[in-house]
Amino acid sequence: MPSLSGVNENFPVSPPRAWAEIDLGALKRNLAVAREVCGGDGMMAVVKAGAYGHGLEEIAKALAAEDIAFFGVANVGEARRVRNAGVETRIYLLGATWAEEREEIVARNWTPCISSIVEAEHFNHLAAARGVRLKVHLAVDTGMGRGGFVAENLPEKLAQLERMEHLEIEGVGSHLPSADEDEEFTLRQFARFHAIIRDLGGESRFKWRHLSNSAGLLGYQQGCCNLSRPGLMLYGVSPLSGFQEKLVTVMSLKSRVTLVRTLPAGHGVSYGRQFVTTRPTRVATVGIGYGDGYPRQVSGKGADVWIRGRRLPILGRVTMDQLMVDVTGAEDVIEGDEVEIFGPHIPVAEIAEKADTIVWEIFTGITPRVTRCYHS
Ligand SMILES: *Cc1c(COP(=O)(O)O)cnc(C)c1O
Image (cartoon, rainbow, N blue to C red; front, side, top):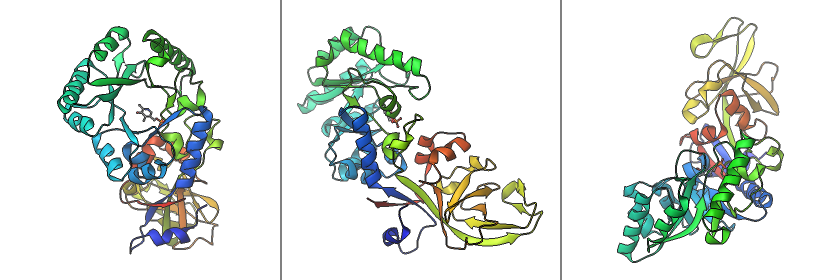
């Protein structure tokens, strides 16, 4: 467990009540696992949504020297932030672009995926006006239903794109909707994607061929693909069971005990008084709540925190800035103690499950109030 003493120096004048310790060494180890699993294929490190709440600039800078083919981002604003951090790695926009974004994409030579002829024509026009040839990837919808050309008459569509002289069709990609839920469908999707590439002229036709997110990369043979797009696994969480042991926790969300008191039997704890003590109860108040992105939905679901080497249960509802923990019998717990909200001892996946959501949402929901502290 990273010690707080080193991290403290990063704190602003007033230490935050909730902070996230981010282990950049663990991030790199997870990248190495991704590389190993897919047999050395190219890597598109997905850093959208502030690198899943881990901090876009810091994560991009940490990975920039790691032979990353592309950083995958959601929009032009994120692409700019990567560039402004001084990172020169190529940038790929993971979804359809909207018209207002395209001029800048062309001007800065970022790489869009193309979902329609109209989008392609616009890019071609903008690239022509600048006298450049823009590298783009053909997006194909093999089941996600979110973007890409539907898989009909694809050779004809590709021929149309190839007539656009200011575009270079450098890659082909698709996306997996249920690689962590439906193996049978996903296997068919891989087969379908491979057949599509064959029908479009074979592997040699595209420098980059990509389908896999983390679950696709961990759970499936990559076949004719040569680029993977891991997100979640880089941040230390496996979407598939059986692989978690290979990965290392990157983010530890922490807070501190701000108050310890003993409440008598029959005393309510937190809003709604959903929890009422049945015996004298030693209660620690901790300085984190849903205003920091800790999900209120775990209230009453038996979520634990970690203090002084013990799992201890949250009592009653999570409030905006504070939550209460039963420290009866944990007499050594005192005000000022560090609390692991999730991290190496309390898996974030456990919190996501109790909140009836997914780890992606927990990570991206951590609010700006939570100071991110980096170490390697
Ligand atoms: C977000 C995203 C990924 C990464 O998915 P993970 O499940 O986090 O690995 C890959 N590809 C696309 C198109 C995405 O939008």
